[in-house]
Length: 336
Image (cartoon, rainbow, N blue to C red; front, side, top):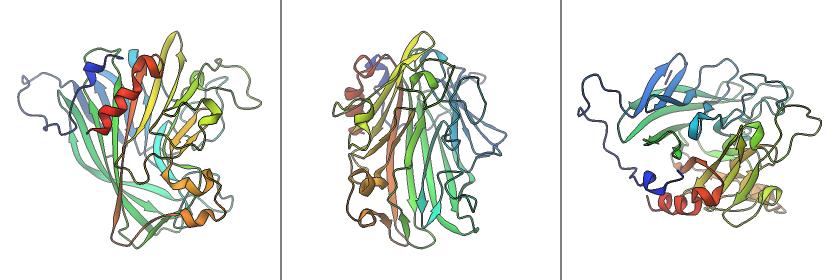
């Protein structure tokens, strides 16, 4: 591969200075980033947090997999990277944690089986432009090309990921995502589709329900709630500042909150929040979620030579949204 609940723990600024030479010569930074074969490994205080992956044969877009929450518990589904007995095997394109969209300039970039007669488009890793470990945070920046099934570059993007340090293994773990999409090869149109955006497929036990026909495996314990108080299936298609999914992984009560920054276009965003484990912040699906008579009228467009920028924050926390103080976490994020 190339390229804790305690709120005081999270009081940091995103305008962090790059890691300086203040560490002892052999000391390891609190947030360590290391390139791997086809990706980048992230460690917090020497413990695995996640890996950014782009080089796996099955990938048509970069992902974070696996992702470990407080106490090191797995927060995302293993399939399709690994097949576990009793784990739902639907939607093979739901790959842990990722960003892409169904239809961009007419090409599918989301689902490997969206079109039966042709391959999907691919988000192609073009390299890391920054990799910084540090005692306050780690951050890295990547560049990508969106290449259609016919081989044409549709657009490009630049993504910066920031991972703040933690004090304790049980502290809330944060992944900040900043993506700028460039209409570098002509105008860009994101089709009005529900499938797309900044997404996560949570671990099986964090699902609210199992997929129809699924048998065995762990029992679902999950709950979905958004900033407006909508629960489970009622959170689908609603606009909200954040969505939280919580439940149990093993005997540990954990959750993940996805926060939509107020600077994002059309904030608060719409949410493709499914009780079977998928949640995505999808600003591109307004026409579908609101059932507009002409969904195409709400297509998200970027003029040639222009760009659009987005910011999201993932907070992997203990307990549910109240115990984690998700509303306060959003207020902190919104002020940065």
